[in-house]
Length: 221
Image (cartoon, rainbow, N blue to C red; front, side):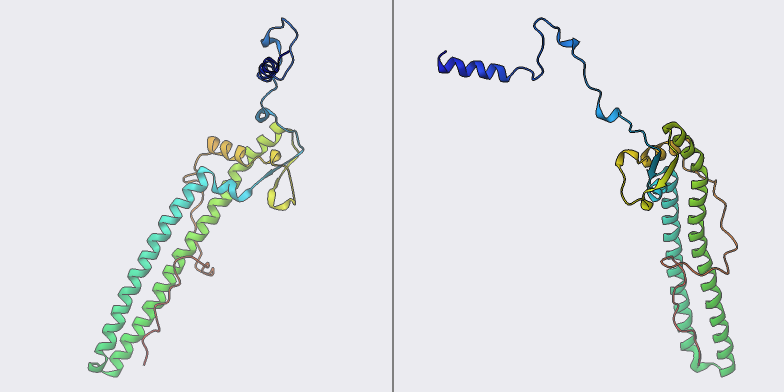
């Protein structure tokens, strides 16, 4: 066979499907493999990312937005209060030279008490925000538990473990996204389900929250 025709024949062979067919067999008779995404690996153990379960849910996103707004409002309130107290302290200091010592001391003591009361009230508001976050998370996980149980039974598994407690695992047994979707569908954003925080006066102010601001040294001698 001439070399040129041999090359054309080889190119034609290369263009044919790789799977061999019997002469005359219809192409549709060949079975097709199922898509890989439809395969679910059975496992007695499932895993989830507990933090992402809350953060990625409708419930968690609502809480984050509401607390961000409330924290910003509290921070603005704190700044306004601080500015007002600084102005009041400055006025008292400027009037000191024209006041009797006893009168100045009485006003200074009243101002110091006012600062303490305001700081206590603002710290309480900050603690309420922190406590509200905790209550929302606790209520969310309580509401999510039946949903997780249903997925556990549907998968024929024995347990769902937090991924942080496992050294290594296959991604195929992670059901975080599946549970988030199920909770969003069955529970929603959880508005009004968590109890309101209260009775927090004796708890320490959380780090990183608005409140507990420094109003400067109380006016003294």
